[in-house]
Length: 197
Length: 238
Image (cartoon, rainbow over all chains, first blue to last red; front, side, top):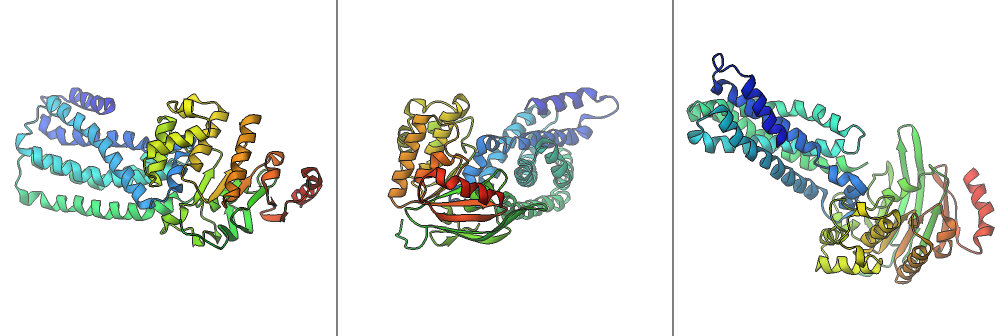
């Protein structure tokens, strides 16, 4: 959360308001904040299971490994969601963005994009946690997979803030929905194999 | 749990490599109800790898493990239910108290009244007064007792123990041996992997020596440990 606030402060104060209107920079700033906030959060996703082999304790239990993945995904979504819930009001304050008409749409886009990259991040975090360089490995693995939902989400945010019509949004919304379906399904199916040593 | 007549634990032709290093080269074993198999061997012989494969935590490159006749596989999580594991680590969460850790584990196993089950398990391990402590506040010996409490929480039919006497003082070791003897007496199957042969010798009904990726020796335990040691050294030397 501190990290998210820091990014917003830096981007806002680095901007020359006479050269660049807030609305032009706002979508990028918002999604940079969300993306890096999520990476920091996901880096800790399996850290609590690393100490004392608690992950083995989970894997020993008579629980489908797919259920363990989905449980971890929900927990990560909640955690990243809290970071976003704190960052969004700061974003409104710093960038003086009139959010009223776009709030519903922005929340939907945030939920869709976050679900996509947190789904991928959760499985990569599970892979990285058993390596010595987990905190370096996760961003390297995850960031390329974050590009499609981030491009779509930033594009949608810009259009929503500008009050563009629905016809300009649904293509990228479809991309986000498809990304979520594909990666939540793939990650759930692959998790048992990833957990096998 | 339904009665079962066959061996509680059966492994067939287990093989596993780490890169070019072949750790297990066709290990087979069966452990019947009431039996205790003691697996000994030199460092790096693959004892921990064998135990992790038996627990379903590691996939063998070849071979299979059956617990109460059910093959350990992803698609059958219930096949893991009869397994209890005491490993090198306690399997506990550092941020939860012992009571919370065991209650959480009890929920994973679908045990009714998990908080009560956790209290009972901690009391049986002599840790009732430490229920509010977190793992990081415990000494090595107390942490090992907590790990044992967690492993026994769901009354497993198959107990896999990796160096279970590490960190225990003489009194705790003796109490733990009594507990394991009682568990075997109740018809559970035990596999103990240890370097501390003296601690586990009297518990064993069979002894196996893992060397060179295979059981170099497997036989019923008979006689004193001192008489076995030359055979053990010979088996380790290959």
